[in-house]
Image 1: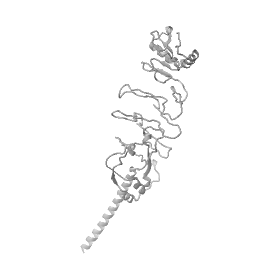
Image 2: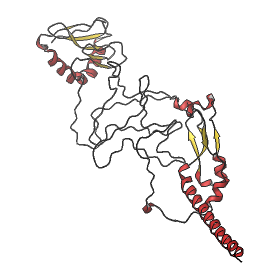
Image 3: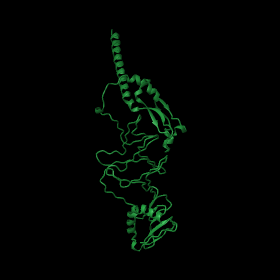
Image 4: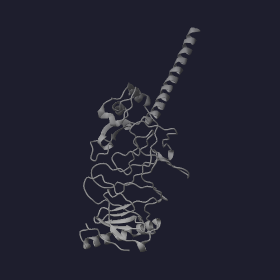
Length: 345
């Protein structure tokens, strides 16, 4: 197989350095691709690249199957020469590339991509795109015996971290994250946990929260201690002031996705004066952060309360009120009996 550098190669030494860096990385691609193209390398010859920037490997039919350029770019098949990459592979076969590792070392990686530049760059170590037609295509697909895809964001510093972030748009129905779990003893479509921070939300929904199954709260006796009867519930409930209201429609709160229409409820500040243990401070990410900006604005802070905790108080208040009614009924019966006794005299 004869090879000849193009006239634009800076020099033989430069070409030899480029060839040494590139040829080892390309051998496996070249051999597989050559077999697929039924090339006869015993009759292959070198020719000037079409862009006069390096060397072409051509088969007996005169087709270029690999190009080594003077800029150290290696292209296998008819790879796009306009992409700023050092390796380009294009194939009509099922897999354009196939990497296999039989390492028995823990945490082995068959393919590793690493971005090593520094600075405030939203770069991607791996980028996948697949858009053959609307409603078709997976940008990335993974299969694992334990975890299909594991996302981590661990760098220390300011700003937010997202282990996994999903966005869906422009469809009839769009899902930022879609989870499905099937079979087994227990299945969780989406499982969230949070801890170690001043404020922890295993799940935070900005907008309506809808479910078609059961919403089950942990209430097993095995997890509870310091059990005491509730007292003074009726007096506490009487201090709460129910309101009907609408949420403020203002661009400043647009990122909170507050519901429209008439609502009914309490003011968290009122609840806090009567039942302070039910009220918590909450945080909503800023509009800048939700738009993907790094080091965005401050989160929106607000007070909220747990309405579920009011249910036992309401039950107890009804019980206390019923006890008062029964006492009054008994007193009325006693008075009626005395009136009847006096009337009969």
